[in-house]
Length: 307
Length: 314
Image (cartoon, rainbow over all chains, first blue to last red; front, top):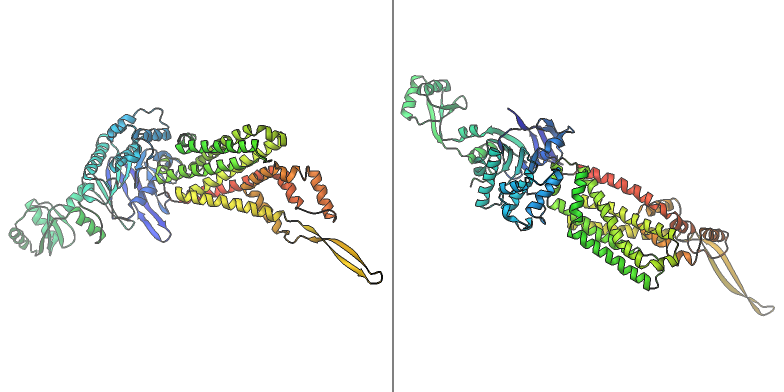
């Protein structure tokens, strides 16, 4: 698998506070990688370090295979766009003027493509209106447009839906999906609104207290959080034989625990297990949500929203 | 880097703040030119250049502060420009702006006060003093850029820059005062002596050379002199002194006369007013002051770049 970004035990310390603690993650090409974590978990710091706004205090990272210590990292960064914390735009300028400035910075020979960018983010009709008087959603979209100037193939978005109204959230979500699916842009997006991320992400990285707690694909995560029956048995090998015979989908968690992804009568299961000399100890129904999965990973007291 | 310079200059020189700064500097130049041409003032004042400097503080603080408050500095860094390049581009842009503002202030000033200036001073002196004034403004600009990028907030940068320039003015002033205290001074007095035999009173007067009470001795004097020379505001003050009739033309016309006065004073004759070494340096050696303060500004810029490179951009 080709990776756009790879970090290797990446660390960032501010005096006594550790913002990033040996984070090792990999962002596959073409993915929408959701970085999940509560406020202050280290999501923004990770993005800032990747963008070169802050220097790591330990570890390394590579963008398109180019290590951060290399001289050509600047050239690699030209292939990415980013909106970190808030959109980086000149408030005293119109949307078009902002894009013109970005085009000049990138050394693009003409202003061709500005109209398409404005259309892509839905800001065609803003005319000479200054960015200062834009709504938060419009500013966010303009920030994304500025980040998209120069046609990058890797986009970093830090909490892009924070503070947006429902309409704005939908617009940004659709824009991100469009960029990923139609323009093949790899997206690294951070958020603590899990319900929104679940509609976008193809991969997840769970961050807590500066550490990457878990990295998982959306498919695997879906499998883990879907409705299932959690059983505890005296012998999981016997359980495996029984479930295989019945053609059920399952997952062995430990020596005694397993998850069964099928509706199966308890009496039938108990009888079948007894025939295999195995005792059914406990049975419970699990309907794990992304939120409870996250809480299981990082512990309680989270401020992650699932609205 | 050239591309970044072009974009930064386009943004800066197309801003409303720059237009207002140009108008304000030109207005100061015109006003002072009128005062010079009509009034009794017999010196080339640094006031228009000081006005240009104040306008520059506002313009630089607002533009650099906006880069940080809008977060647009991030776009530049993400696009592969280094922090060093960003710093240097800001410096080059601010220096260009300072030069333009100096021209806005200086050209109308000189043109309006033309007749008066040339009836008082020769061309060489005028050019030297104008170069010194421009150098003072340019060197102060580098300090302003250093402070703005270190502070990174428009309001704080304005306060810090104003405070720093006030400090530089005060330091330059105080050091100048300290260095002009005489090494020796003459004390004179007299007493009446009564002769009982002749029953007459005779007035006896005396005069003696005594060490100056406030004279700054070595090694403090060397430290003071270095500090005085590296302060960019000294360039502005020295330029003013150079073309000031009050201090120089009317009392001490040439260096030779100054030296002769000094020798005379050291021999214990005549009246010692100023420390002649310092006066001579201030008037005739001051053309080299920008080299001193320029070196300091270079070091400061180096420190500024190192600090900026180490600091995190939020």
